[in-house]
Length: 267
Ligand SMILES: [Fe+2]
Ligand SMILES: [Fe+2]
Image 1 (cartoon, rainbow, N blue to C red):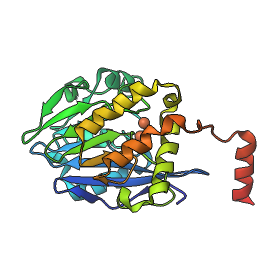
Image 2 (cartoon, protein in one colour):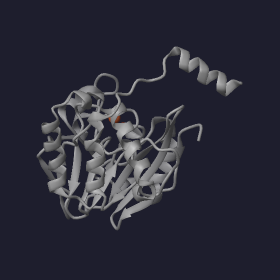
Image 3 (spheres, rainbow, N blue to C red):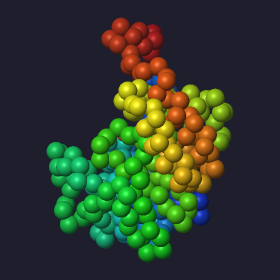
Image 4 (cartoon, rainbow, N blue to C red):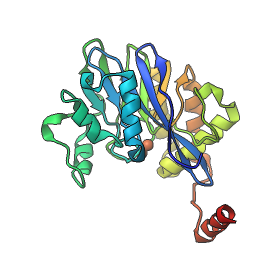
């Protein structure tokens, strides 16, 4: 895969659709970039995919739900791989409001201010009723942006974890259990060292306590923006992430390595 690619939507559960894509990182592998449609009584879109794939994203989104019906966009954070179709979604879904935090609104105001009448601020620990279930805001144990919020859906028993529990992969997969155990562990640890480099400096006891918060929640489904759907794998994923602080810190290719890579590509 040499360019960002949209894949066909698939079901994570009876009321959850995944709108997946993959993003290649030269020399390192591919990263899934997922958005989710939660078909609650008041339907919720979780994130909006990659900027360069916006047209295709809207097409795939429309194949799983009429955007007009969307009532909420849960923006887990404002990175470019999560806001790709933010504006087309706002236009296509006039009743929709964006769930984010004060920092999320602040960061968006640095380039593309969000309309104040379309936002809904929700902090970790707070909840929102979406008609047939109450979604709870949960801070994921790892993240790369301070405004990040995940959410727990008690009805689907699913934790939408934003960047947390992502993995660098070598090829696409339909579900996390389709990835060999060691490959999944190594891919998750590698991703964590890239996405949350501060992990190497954390107090291990406090980090374990943070992982325990998710352990106690014990979701059947972990729905990461950067991992195929993980069903009943919560303990394995927590163990994998728990080993990340001990891993080798990530250092990207330097200029010499980049020139060697380019030479390899162009011959
Ligand atoms: Fe991110
Ligand atoms: Fe991300």
